[in-house]
Amino acid sequence: MDKQFFQDFLMLSQAHTIATLAILCVVFYALKKMRDIKINFSLRMLFALLMGLGFGFALQYLANFPDAEEASNILWYSETKHWFAFVSSVFVAFIKMLVVPLVSICIIKVIIEIDKNIKISSLLGISLFWILFSTAIAATLGIFLGYSFDLGSNFA
Image (cartoon, rainbow, N blue to C red; front, side, top):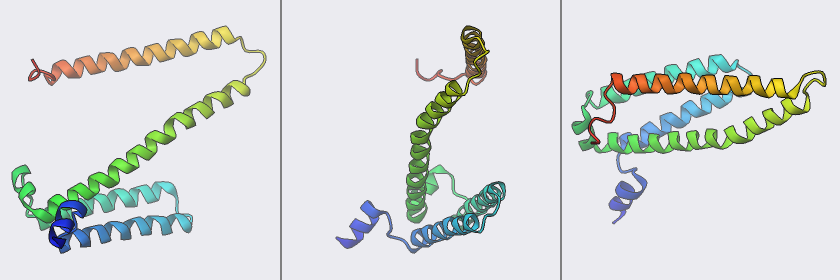
């Protein structure tokens, strides 16, 4: 019963999984310490990128560079993948939570600090132009890439 709880619910049944999560926690702690001693944000991101690349390569190496079918049969690898997916989904959810209030506050700040000599109609016209222009570029690029890579051909 205990093994099934750790394997199916917590996904911590293998020593490799626990060691991988411990290393991930050490990397997070190192990033926090780097922030505490006021290391530049760019250097911290470069450190995190290099650690992530090295960590990913090390995990692939320990699993003997499996393909998708072999990877699903390696229990510790599958558990680690699920834990990393959980951490990354929480991170992305936090970023999504921050975007709307941040953009709203920035828009309100710009409106409050607007110069009295600027015509609002011309400002709105220019803003609307750039929004529509960037949307048109994104749509054109999306359609071009969709046709180039034949996206959606399996859905019909």
